[in-house]
Image 1: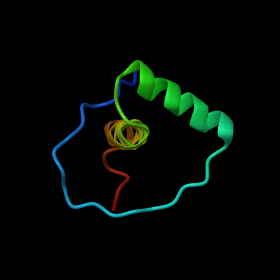
Image 2: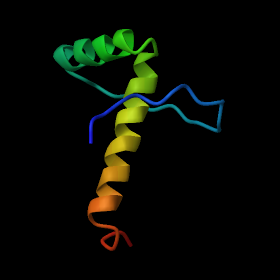
Image 3: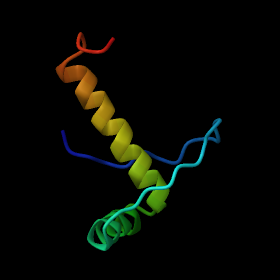
Image 4: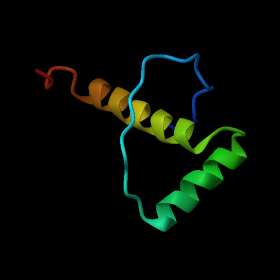
Length: 64
């Protein structure tokens, strides 16, 4: 399935985490954000959600 960032959601309860990323990865994510008229954060969150959804579809019975 091709990754497409989700539209920005309404505000939900959230927390802050710090990630250390290579500059190359940051540049790639920024480019995706620009191309989709969204934020860096939205791209990262969309990618994480996408990966988690795919993981659940591939092995729904492996989670505790």
